[in-house]
Length: 420
Ligand code: C2O
Ligand code: CU
Ligand code: CU
Figure 1 (cartoon, helix red, strand yellow):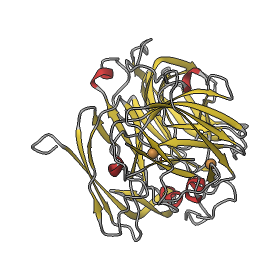
Figure 2 (spheres, helix red, strand yellow):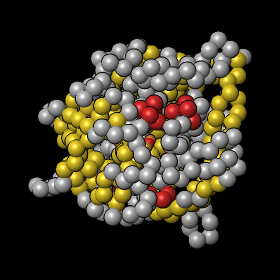
Figure 3 (spheres, protein in one colour):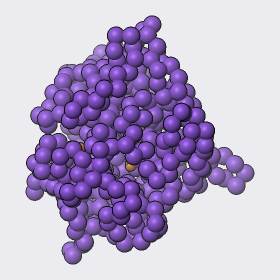
């Protein structure tokens, strides 16, 4: 924190080596270290300055996925940082409490840069929600879980050979960069902030004993009321906050089970929970969570249509860095129809928060009705979103919307919009 109250963060992109498999160090990339990046934590109202230094041998960018900010600070493909150079975006945090993240976004190389290890969490606290009594001791009862899959070959190296449709999709699952991890539970309630930080893999997350747990938040903030479930699905880029209950001395595995989305989704152990002899009791999750009103589109709201086809096109066109596809008025709430004509994709919009109105005309499950910025779009389906845009105008600097399966994004399943 500097004298004028600005919070300054420093993130250096660098190469290193990480012990993922025992005795076989893996060449990886990270922020301020060899692999992944530190959790950035801010509060609503903070003025932040991020100093991003690129010590890699190639140009990259850092995008603040989920942050509401001016387009020139967004870190998309237009804000490239040359090797050896730095970039210093700054903005004021003005959004509800949420689990966001950051990762590179250089057009054509996002998949490789994220896969090599460049990703971190960006948590927003909001004084309005800290009074809810949710578990909030970081690393103790408020635990981030970054889910990623890798293809590690016999000598421990990251394989960078993409599979035809999905790209880099592997069967070694890492949680926070750790292979075969466990967590020592010391409290009866544990909040998990789960990020699907994978390039393409979908996770269908449940406890092996099928115990129920409570979803409290989606990508862009808390749900208005908790949703009790026994399984959740996360496509790449999506986040969920859940609260799970544990008894003394028990052991239970969090796993991902096979799905029917057409993406290679086998069964994988994610994380083993090992509870202590005695657990510190937690408070029950309150029945009302976010105070933020639900995102509503009014009658006559502007509607736009996006058709996903192949693995590289939206509305019949590939991404063009020099073309602005959509111009949106500041502060608008619009209805976006995302029609997927082929196999599974997803859809992420920078800067905004949206609510999923329906999937093929049907309401999504309660746990997906919170504020979001990324949504799974099943094969041959249409998803309708009520999209709330911010107030940072700039006719020359675009924001992106795209499929967050990173191979598809790199190949051109991405478009650009400006807010004016
Ligand atoms: Cu998480 Cu445009 O990205
Ligand atoms: Cu984003
Ligand atoms: Cu896709």
